[in-house]
Length: 546
Image (tube, rainbow, N blue to C red; front, side, top):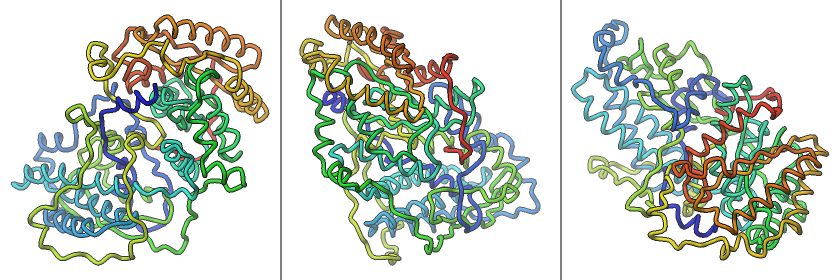
């Protein structure tokens, strides 16, 4: 089923989110940095199902030109020329960039090009052309970020699972930046795209539980044995959360099936090193690195008519700091609080939309260098290339900064099987030799004992399935699983919530017959947050996670 699931993904997204580069545009000064702490972070997590974005600053400005031109202290400046200068530098460097550091610098240059091009005043005759250039520059920015993120930083051999490698690196980076999450979501691909940490956080805040940090550490193909491995062997004790939400279903507990994912992990070089006492870790900070400073237009009275220079830095840490609210114009502050930056929705910058091209995976190609830039001189690299950029994992491209895989496609049973075979439960390997005892039950019991010892509450969520999926074989397995989990929850003291048949006919909530899409994930997250019988932990005092 997992292979059919992976093969069915027909979309490609913008590789890495624009979070770091976008925050750069809000940073002033060249100092060491800390997490951004503004209302922009909350605006960025509004779900796609809810989002009705307010008018952008672009739209507001176009309707109120009189207010924009009445700024005697802000004389006109040519943002277009500044933007082209930065775009030229970025294009030149991109032609010879072949390391993570090179592509980071390319991305930073494109951020500046975007900011300056957006600073072209609405009253300028260059405005219409500039708006198109902003869109082009954003594509270039996305590609450069994609390349910058293509090289793994994790100082460890592979665990023979691309998504586990990706999720582990992201989780360790999250912990290094924010600290261990208050709530950790685990499970298989059904959890990976079935519980949205940002929506769960937002819904909990609306119910009076604000400030919780939540991360999704689910991995495709994960069984009870894989989750046991993640929690008890892979993560250090200090990296564990205050609470665990395990979201999955009966397939992860069938001991009769061949556990390919777990077997591959155990046989991997990464696990061999782990057994020898060598844990995966990220590179240490480099305290002697000098921050690189960049120029951005400074808004004046809600506009960008005066493109005053401010400087921003890429420091030695992954955290970003808004150093002084007084240094940022109130007009920009209002825009940020509304969830926008330079007229663009922050939600789209931080979580770019998915793309489907002719029903097949669309590879994001390098943006062709404009003719005007082709004869420009090459820029000398600040350091020699140290590592070539490798291919980007398609599945990992879809994961956001909190470990969640957001898929927007809706399951349509009338067309879904046009290009894939229908597999009934009788022939589904995930239900082969169905047995709720054995090795998976032992792994689950190990997890229960482990979290009890560490006083970590566990909530198990049996995720929804479609009516089409629940044939006789699968329905019987679900009944057996539900009865067993209800009994175990009473005996062992964990919470069990059964959503398996909550929306059997809501195909618009599903990506395929057994996996939720982003709209289903929003609905599940809201259900979990609305459950008043669940006792949530108190947020630890730490930086927000955006």
